[in-house]
Length: 361
Image (cartoon, rainbow, N blue to C red; front, side):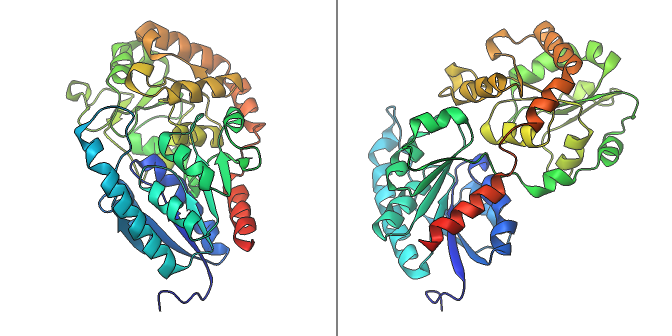
């Protein structure tokens, strides 16, 4: 019977982008080990539904509307979707009777967190970025605790709720095999490897900068280029020492283990994975013109802590990229040492302990 609890129950929620789902997925093994019956609330057809279905966890879709800070015709209809989602979430929480709710963010979480507050269910929110996004800002007053990735974020959170945890990292990323990664790419062990990650959609400016100096790079390095959907350059197919893929899932841990240096955008989850794996890195944050500026702040924090070299998109070209690569590779030991000293090395354990503490009360 759905409403009858035979063990501790947790509702996970988060969606809209993979970054709002993968940290939840990273928590699954530890939550199961602690005896939790896990349920997931997301949108009807968001990316979260596809990602969660792989793990045989009961999934409940609710109505979801985006809350925008700019004019859009959907601003007139989406509030009604949020209200509908709230009613659906309240009904689910009444039926499922969770001990605790864990929210990773995204607009689908707003009705879930508000409904949990109304039903007096304790809620933990995780904020990945330096500054909370709009959805989390709405939810924070309803939360019991708020987890953060960056020390600077604590300043913008209620002190009695804020906890510095870092981001949960999928355990499979730590099981990579360098030799398997090199073999997958057809690479040798005699040259260092650069892994370029432009995000699931890819980055035209990053791709262009890498390819503009490819002959120079290949004199010293081998390049694994994750360039994004529909962004392969077929003229470069078969170039010795250079491989390109739209997207990699299964072999990513092997490719990460093979990498001596990583070039990446500065999304919170991506850079936390780089930190956890101790990879010397160059961050090229999405420009303020194309975002709310969260990647710029994320990258600045990692640079300040000595984890990363930051190359602003506005200054990115072939020569600046070459200069950055040379600087980071020469100083790679120092970057690795700084990352090893980080306090954010056991996010999963910290967060699950927090869940246990909150659920008991």
